[in-house]
Amino acid sequence: MSMPLPIDVVVLASSEAGLHWVRTVSGLKKPGVSPRYLMATIERSDKFPSFSSIDPAGIGFWIALDQPSKLKCQETVARLQSDTQYSRGFYDVHLPDPVVVATDMADLQRIVDDVWEAFCATS
View 1 (cartoon, one colour):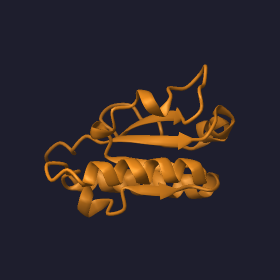
View 2 (tube, one colour):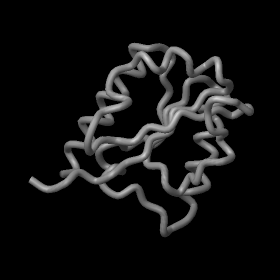
View 3 (spheres, helix red, strand yellow):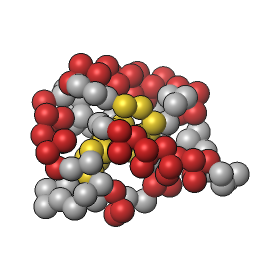
View 4 (cartoon, one colour):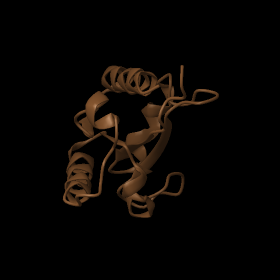
């Protein structure tokens, strides 16, 4: 068995308050080789990086927690996809929609589980 392909995942909320419940989802922090999750906000936050500080070219999957975040992620992915050199590699197959929306903890848990399965499938 070979090593899974790395993937960086952004979990984006409009504000810091939108990320508080996210920490209770299992699988966001696994030891060893695993997907890397970055919590970020559109608005300025003291606890989380801002969306503007993220290098979008290094992100393989986007999880939006509200409508403004979804729009921001979709705009970013559309801009990236307009570059013919851009590719998410095998994640284009295993996670075909690069932007998903989680409206509650159950949604987010399902998405994190899907990311884990895709991660494992790339090895």
